[in-house]
Length: 146
Image (cartoon, rainbow, N blue to C red; front, side):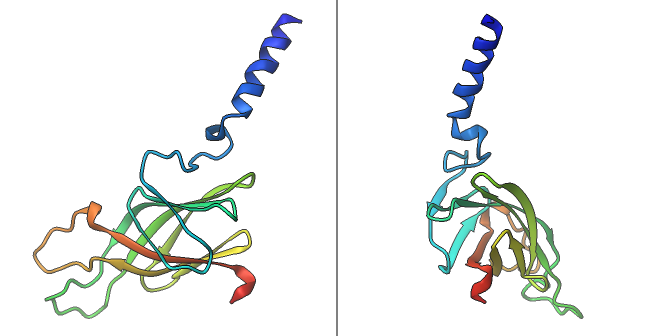
């Protein structure tokens, strides 16, 4: 009986800690900012946007692909960059999505649409681009608002 009471106590305590409910609530290791639906927002890698009224968080994870034609170069194709985001909805779980600077620029997550508006800076010929310089300009809308 004592084992069951102990186990029940541990489960109750862990259940009260938001880190176990939402893997990256506002207490993530990176910076966070509050924003609202239908508002343009900008994230750096590791930064999280918190939509408090919706219970949604969006974190800019990385740029796994960067093949855009650098400024100062002559290219036959514009190239593309891919932005990797992790999105969570309180009580519903999380997922990772990738948005492209060409297509697809949008992805659906539950009843929301996430759109990549811009990724900056643009590569420059003969210059190494540091990942910490990336800024993803995004917007999230209710899926039926389009």
